[in-house]
Image (cartoon, rainbow, N blue to C red; front, side, top):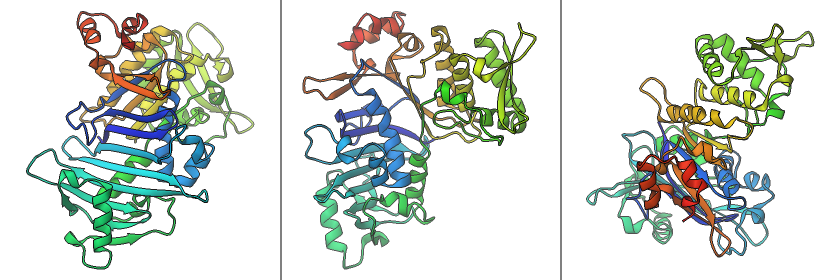
Length: 425
């Protein structure tokens, strides 16, 4: 299962310089866990951090121009007072046996307001002091060099910087390139090299990374959207806001009846009374969700069902996706849910995130305000986002606070530790 080991964000809204997990400069740090939860007060940057993943996926799918414009433009994204561009570093592995890949992306706006990819690189990192790193892609201003397959350019650790890359590109722009590298240039400087070159089979590493980021899924589920009555037609994946909830139920009850039965059994354990949910076609050729309650003779319909019931159904369907995304990002999943359901929800998400030999799961990233949700988490799964004296966000892992580890080992729940302010040290 592909997973993010670490990410660094610079100059994105309140995230002036924030790092989570393992990076090139701190490769000995613990990587991100399969389930990662970020907590913090209002206004510290949780929404901005959540949006980073959607932004990077949009840059890969649609280009930097559309990704920025969808969020009000480049200047709306740039940290207040920042003179340098947006910078992102993503560290990921295709699977547990694969080497770590380091992707760097720098986005800027020129003097006439054009958004462009300033720098971009993809490097395979080696932790051995003997072996060198392998450069697969290096671009500056839409021009650079790419290597096919597993070849790459061996480089020392101190050479992994933009100065070295620029000099190498200039030196080899007119002549043969070591290890059969190929010089490339793109006319659309708002498109990433990964998104363009990833369409070609010979660039296997690049193609897999492109698919990895494009497959990121951000959930902003809303019960209001889930109550929209759609046209019939089975769909395998829940939309970002959940307006196709009935379509996903239609797919599951027809194509995955055994799995759907398991979902309903889980529902009945946490939502008292509900034992059946089915999608039915109306006389107007619309698709309506019908709920059966053991205590009622007549069925209930989607507009009569609580927000929490709809949300629980949506999350269970999300985790039952037959082709799950590599990365799921959820903003405040606790909204509308009874607090005693949160532990069950976390268990489901963690089980899915860890995966099994038969079922490949998704890495799960959440933001929350709810201490009850933390009660089911471990300190290494939790990150605390705060605001520094300069007004920009800071972040640290709960397990980096010694008193938190001590209290957790003694059996104190993490939600109670947070409620008593020990996570804000």
